[in-house]
Every structure is written in structure tokens, then in C-alpha cells.
View 1 (cartoon, one colour):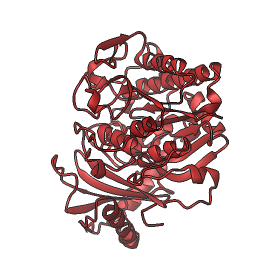
View 2 (tube, rainbow, N blue to C red; view 1 turned 90 degrees about the horizontal axis):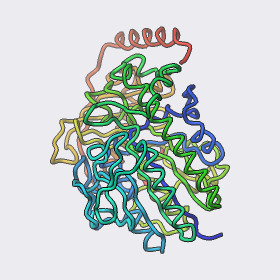
View 3 (tube, rainbow, N blue to C red; view 1 turned 30 degrees about the vertical axis):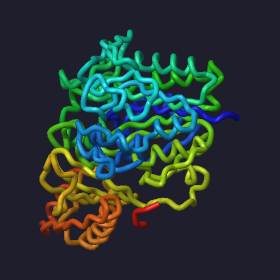
View 4 (tube, rainbow, N blue to C red; view 1 turned 90 degrees about the vertical axis):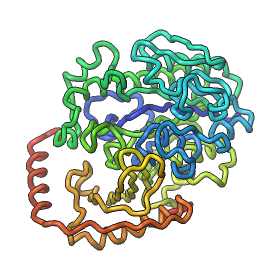
Length: 460
């Protein structure tokens, strides 16, 4: 068999629980669900930085934001870093990028700021130069091109045309949608006409949004409508590959840059290390991933590039911090990390660690010029087994001081490893009245009962 093609189907701001395989009962992602079950479903998949630019830099480089230098939005991806496109290009792959880039700071994106992609139909700020039914992107020569159809369909059509042109060439194709991200100029989630009404008729609201609401009561129908159209487009792309005889030799990853908490954790939609902002849907199908099943290993954005490079049979650069998940797909007993590390550097400068059971986070004041802080304050601890939607913050409860001390040590080890030996201080949370926790836990248990819908140190 010839070298496999690689396609990344990349959504923006999509929660993991929009999918059926993560418990959403609305049946709006049948293609994702079917292919996740036939291929490999990365059940515990997380962004390393819940913000567009830093997350996208991590996807392209396999490195954390403090390593790429892209620690907040509007910082350009450095030219000297190895990227997916450069690595595949050096190995005689055709490479192409379609959609939202967000790593150049300007539109149209100069050729030198395209991360090494050879073919280009994209915009740095797709949310500013286009709208749901006004899909405008820039071509190789930076000429604006208005594509027909709803924006999701327009980008998918362009992706299918690229695949058709390159049936005989091994290729890397990165298709980056804006959906289901909000349309910035209207602060709304515009689905295809009629889809919001269809979603409203069977609307399911995740427990955190039931309790905290935010903007979900008026945004969730449109958001789900956008997710549904993305899934339809995903199925259409897969069908096109099958019709061209390319499906069996094409690795396809579906994932997202971060999720969406609908203004429940801060004043906007992301920039929080809660599950609602960092946990994303991820699946892979194609050579090496068929029949992989549900993989429970903790997968991070920084693992995307190494995984795809490894799966194509290429050498993963030693500079990449992330790891290929392929050994775990082949054998669930393979060595893997026991926690994942998060950085955040807009609205706050924070760090967090998530194991299979615990989420532990620290914070400090935000400085737009500083990618890290010298002093952090403990701000939350969640027991994810008992409280998967992170509704009861256990920080400051004396019974969990030992847990926090262990997690603090693990978090500091991550910081030192990723941030070149940095050794910040983490200030313990003050002790709080345990009766507060009993009251919250009792109230939440009563609330959800009434709703029937409802390790190792870092390193390779």
C-alpha cells in the first residue's frame, strides 16, 4: 500500500458532549459516532490551552504555548519551528490548508506566515472576513474568493475538490472550520436556516449549563445546529473519499481546538480550564486506527502532530513535546502519562492538571506580556469521578489537603519540564467551612436527581 493520505477535520469551540458517543441523546453526530466506533475514539481528549491561537500553534508543532511563544491570541507562529506541513512536505507530501488559521495576525496571510503549507485557501480571522452565508477566503495569491453555500459546506466542497485533484499524490490536508464558534460581530451561533428550530424541538442541555445557564438558553439551539451541519459535512467528505477509492488509505482525524462553557465560568466562552472549555471530541480512522476502539488514555493537543507523523511512517522530531498515541492504540498496556497539563494566559495566567480522577488548578493576575507567573494561588479542586461537570469546588477543604499537596507537586513537575525549569510558588488555599460543601453537594444532588435526562510524572 502506498503512503497514507492524512486529513485533519478541525472544528472550533466544540464540546465533547455534543457527540452521541459522549452521551448526547439528540443524535446530531451520527457520522462522528459511527466512525469513532469503527476506528479509534480518543475518549479523554483535551486542548492544552483553551484559546484559538495557542491551541492551533500546539496542533501544528506538538509543543505547548510557552514553548512556541504563542501564549495568547495575535502572536504569530515563529518561522523557525517545525510544523506538520514542513515535516510532511519534506517527505514529498502535497500539503494544503483550508479555513481558519489564526496564527499570522493579519489578513490576507503572507506566504511566509502559512506554516509551510503549499496550497492555501484560508483566512487568518475567518470570523471577521466571512459570515455563515458569506464564505470569503484568500487563495494562494492572496486574492479573495467567495465560495457558494453555507460556510461549512463551502469549505467541505473545497476539501473534496483538493482530494479529487490529488488522487495520485500522498497529501496532508488540514480543513479548519469556524463552526461551531460564535460569529463575533453578532455574538451569535448561526446554523443553517431552519436548523435552530429543529434542535429546539429536541434540545438537551448538559448538567453544567442546566445549573449555571450562562448564554446557553438562547445559544444552544444554534450551536447544536452548527454541530449537526459539521457532522453532515464530515460524512460527505468521507463519502467522497470512498467514491474516489481513497478511503482505505486515508487517515482522518476529527478534533477541535477547545470547547465552550457559554459564559458560565467567566465573561465569555473559553479561557478556562474547566472540562466545558478544555474537553473536545476526537476520533481517528484509517490505516493503523481501524478497530482501535475506545482509548481512555489522556490525550492532549500536543499529541496530534506526533500521532499523525508517526501514523504516516515518518520520523517524529525530538523537539516535539507531545507523544504519538499509536502505541496505546495497538496495545492498551503501553506506557502513557497519567495526567495532562493545561496553560492559560488570557483573562488570567493559570495552570492546571487533570488526572483520571482529579482536576487541580491555580491562577494569578493576567499580564499580556508575560507567558507565566512567579506566584500562583490555588483556585479549584474537582473530584471528576463524583462530579464530572465540576459543580462542587473542593479547594480549601481540610480533608483534601493531602490530595492537593500531591497534585501540586505533580503540577510543579509539569511546569518545570515544559517551561524550561521554571519553579514558581503555589500558595495554598485558605481553609473553608466544610458545611458550605455539604450544602452545595446536597443541593446539586437534589437538582440533578429531578432531571431524568441527566500518576506518573510528565515526560515521554
